[in-house]
Picture (cartoon, rainbow, N blue to C red):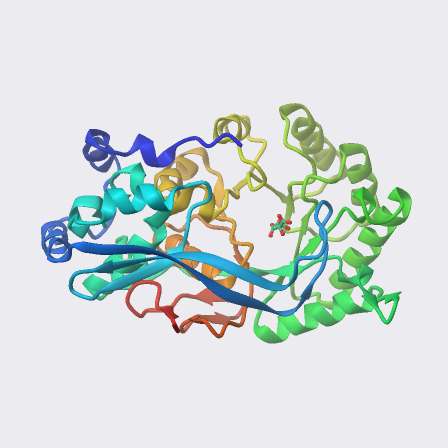
Length: 399
Ligand SMILES: O=C([O-])C(=O)C[C@H](O)[C@@H](O)C(=O)[O-]
């Protein structure tokens, strides 16, 4: 995976230049007072913990991966200061706990973190999200406010938990398409008004023609049963362009809010897909950049106007990386939707980021249950996710 280093590009001396070029709302005079408060805390510990996250139902396969199951153990980082303040969050993939600990322990919070920027040095990346929570908790502000927004911009939130559950055996028989409708109803009752359907059953799990037929059937059934909801589809890079054309023809008349990662992104295939959509009179958004993102290539896609929504995962470039990316997306007229699959811990954290920066077309919702984590006061209202206004991310570790 190629990671354009968004954190590095704003580190050290470059940080001051970056800040000068990207003034954010709400920081002017508050700067030094916040820095002073953060300087009263010295980091004592950078801990790694595991918390159990459970899904409200079994989550099955997507086009490329087998059953996701009932949940998983999430690795989180907790940062503790000499004053007893604690902040925590999911870690960044591929970043080192040891490096973060060596860099952060013994330093004042203000030396490693600036509210208007995020992490100052990339060495602390493992704790990037935890430091945002910590700073919010010390300054007694929700993270969106820490980043300059008095009130969060609220965004619709889609259910990202609808997998190929029709293929899951129940007493040795696949459950069939009804289960997808039941799951949509379950999510509707939770407050979702957007459903993301996984497609690409023919990539691995069904004969190709039957898989495309099933994808079409499921999409049409959901559209018919929930006319007041948006439908998003995600091929997880498992839908070659020719097959995807068949799928689009099969669902004629169904409005898609977005098409996500139908195939591994290339300029050539996305150019053809754009042309096809135009020819078929289909208006939708093209969302990409989640799976093994190559940020330089994504930039090329965006500049060529072949991608409408940027999806890189929050654990990939982190909070600080996303904060750097957000103004670039606005300049390119591309929407944001930091990918949050995995757990509600991520969904909730993303709601603060998008709450502060806006320009987000929807947020990935993953409803969870956990004995280890109090997931805080987040609400789905009219399909929109309202972030907690408690300090930090407003979530607590139960043990
Ligand atoms: O957009 C999404 O939520 C994903 O594509 C998540 C993936 O389905 C994830 O479950 C995986 O990697 O298999």
